[in-house]
Image (cartoon, rainbow, N blue to C red; front, side, top):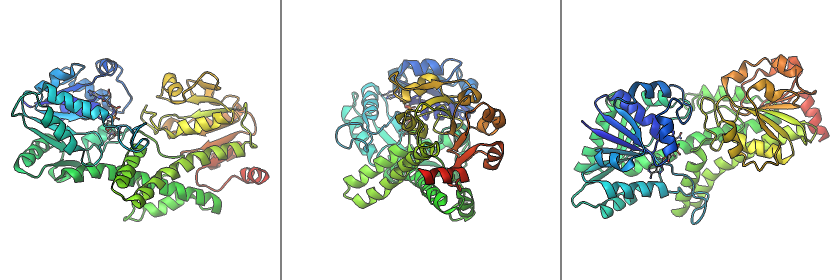
Length: 466
Ligand code: NAI
C-alpha cells in the first residue's frame, strides 16, 4: 500500500490531501502540521476554515484512509510520497523584503524530512515556490540525509485550486502539472505521481514538464490572472470618466474567444494570499536576473490594484460630501471573495483602513468571517470605531452609506427597501463588486456608485462641488 504524507494542513494541503484520499481508497493519507490547533480543528466537527463541499469529503474519509496528526516525523518516516504544502509568504525583512518568497518553512520541512527518513522518498512541491527551488531542496535533502544511500526525487506539482471552489477544482481540474528531472529516475517518479492522479483525472489533462517549467508556470499563471483583473479595473476607471459601462465592455471582450469571459469582472480589487505574493516574487526573480523592465511590467499589475482600492475609498469620501467623520458606514463582506472565510490580502482591509483613516464608524458584516479575524486584520488598537455585527440589516441600520466589499450571493437578495428605510438620508450604496441592480436601488431612493458605471447624477453634482 502506498503511503502519502501531506505536510501543511492549510487551504491547499487540507483539501488536496482529502480529495486524494477520497479518490484513492487504497492509499493511506496522513496530513500533518506543526500547528496543533489546526490539526485539532481538522479532527473536530468545525474544520479550520470554510470551503464548500470540504466537510463532506473529510467526513467520508477521515478515520478510514485519511488522518490528521501533529506527529509530523512519524508520518514523514512512514511515507513513500511526501507532498509539501507549507506556506511561502513574502519576506518581510532582509534581502528581497516585500518581494522575495520566504522559504523558511519549506527549508525547515526539507531538513526535517532529511532528518527522519530511512527510505527513498518522492518529495512533491505543492506550495508555490520560486523557479529553481527544487535544486536547493535537493541539496538540503541529499547533504543532510542521516542514512546513507537514500534517494530523493523532487517533483514540482503546483496547485491551481481557487479558494471557494477548491473541492470542485480538485475533483475536476482543467490540468494537473507535474515537473520532474528528465533522467530515468526522475521520469519514474513522475510516473508514480501520474498514477495517483490517474485514479480520477483523464490522462490528457495531466501535463508533464521539466522541473523549472512547472515551478515557473505557477507564478506565471497567477500573474496572468491578476493582470486580467487589473486590466479590466483600469478600464473601469476610464468607463467612469467617459460614460461607458464596464460590464458591457467586459461582455464584449469576453465574447472574443481569444480573450474569454473569466477574470473580467471589475471590482474594488483582487485579494487573497497568492496574487500579490506571487507577482512580487516574479518581480524579484526578474530583477535578480537583471530584467528590470520585465519586473516593472508585472509590478504595474499590483500598482493598479492598489489604485483601485484607494480610488474606491476616495469615491466614498467625496460622494458623502467630502467627510465621513463620525458617520456610520455599513460594510457588507470582508472575505477576499465569496464562499471562503479567508481574509488574507482582502481588499476590504485596505478599504476599511482608508475609511477609518477619515474617521468613519464601521459596522461590518460577513457571513463567514469571525469578529476576531476582522479585528486581527484591521490591527485594531481600541481607538477605531468598528463594530462587527451578525447580519446586513444591523450593519446598515442608521448608516449613511453601505459598501459591498465581497460578492456573497446573500447580498443580492437583501430587502433593500427595508435597508433604505433604516438608513440616514441621503442613503449611499457603493457596490465594490457590481452585484446589485443599480436601477432598482435608485428607484428606492439610494444614491448609487458601482465600479466602472456612469455616475449617478447626484454623485456628479457632489463631485463637481468637491
Ligand atoms: P496556509 O498558511 O493555509 O497553510 C500552510 C500550513 O503549513 C500551516 O498550517 C502551517 O502551520 C504549516 N506548516 C508550516 N511549516 C511547517 C512545517 N515545517 N511542518 C509542518 N507544517 C508546517 O497556506 P496555504 O494557503 O495552504 O498555502 C500553502 C502554499 O500553497 C503556499 O505556497 C501558497 O502560495 C500555495 N497555494 C495557495 C493557494 C490558495 O488558494 N491558498 C492556491 C494554490 C497554491
